[in-house]
Image 1 (cartoon, rainbow, N blue to C red):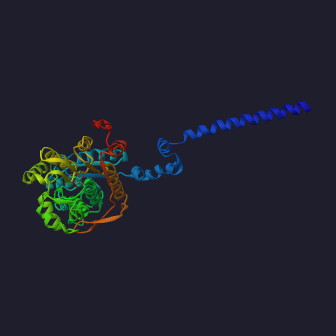
Image 2: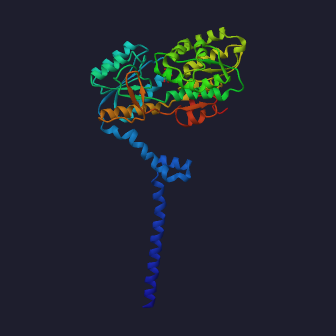
Image 3: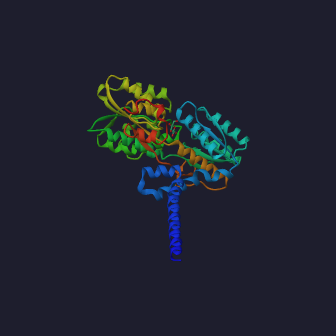
Length: 410
Ligand code: BGC
C-alpha cells in the first residue's frame, strides 16, 4: 500500500515537473513571436523605452491608413513645372502614397504657365474630382483656377505655395517657410567669424509667396548681424537702403527681391551671380557668404562663385535636399540644404483630401494670410543638413538611397 502511494506521489511530481517545463518552454517562444519588425527595430535602438516605443507605431497608423479603405473620391493634383527636380519628386511621392492609400489620383503639370494651370483645373473638374491639390505657378494668377474649382463644388488645397487674393482656398499644406529662411541665415551666421564679411543675397520668384516667407525668415536672422557689422551686403542697393529696419513690409521686401530674384531659374541665377561678381571689387570677394534660396539656384550660384579667382571660399545655402545638391554637399561645393521632407507634405495633403471627401475638417494649428482670407494650415518642420549630418538626415532616414551618391564614406 505504502509503496503504491509513494509511486503515485512520484508520478504526480513527475507530471507536475513536466507541465512546468512545458509552460516555461512555451512562454519565451510566444514573446519572440509577438513583436512586429518595427518593435524589434525600436527596441534595438532604445532598449529601455520598450513599452512606450511599442505604442508609437499604433498611434501613427490611423493617420496614414485609417481613412483609406472607405474613400472612393477622385483627387486631382496640379504641380507647377517639370523643369525642377523638386516637383518631379513630389509627383513620384504622390503617386506612391496615393496608390498605397487606395485613392484614385490624376496628376497634371502646368509647365510654368498660369493659363495651362487653369485648363488643368478645368479638366480635373470635368473628370469629377472632389478635391484639387494645387501648387500655383503664380500665386495671384492661380486665384482664377481656385475660384473655378470652388464654383464647381470642389475643395481646394494649396500645396507648398499659397494661392493669393481669393477666398476660394480651403486649406494650405506647407512647411514652415519662415523657418526655412531662418535656418539658411542661421547657417551663414554660424559660419562667420569677425566683422565685415561680404554677404550676397538671392531670392526666389516674386510671383511665389514663399519667396517672401523665405526672405522674411532670412532677414529676421541676418538683419541684426548686418547691423552689428558681422556682414555687409554687396549686391543689393535696396537691401542696403533698408538694412536698419528689423521688420520689412511686403512692399519693401518686393523692392529687394526685385533686385536679387533668381525667378527660381538656374540660368537666371547663374547670370545674376556672374553679373554681381563682375561688378564687385576684389575686397568684396575673398571669403564670402551667400544666401541662395533653393538647391537649384544654389548650385548655379555656387558654380559662378567657384569660377571666380578672387573668391577664396564661399558658404552657400540651399533648400529641398535635391539629389544633385546632396552630392554637392558631400563634395564640399554647397554648404547646406534645408530638408523639407516631401513624404510628410504628401501625407498631409492626402490626409486633408481624405478628410474633405469624408466631410471632415483637416487639422489646423495656424492660419496664413493670403491677402483675402486667413487660410487654415498645419505647417511641418524643416531640418538643416550639411556634411556633418548628411548620412543620418538623408540616407539613414530613407529619404534618398545611398547608391545615388559617391564619396559618402570619405
Ligand atoms: C518651394 C521650394 C522650391 C521653389 C522653386 C518654392 O515655392 O517651396 O521648395 O524650391 O518653390 O520651385
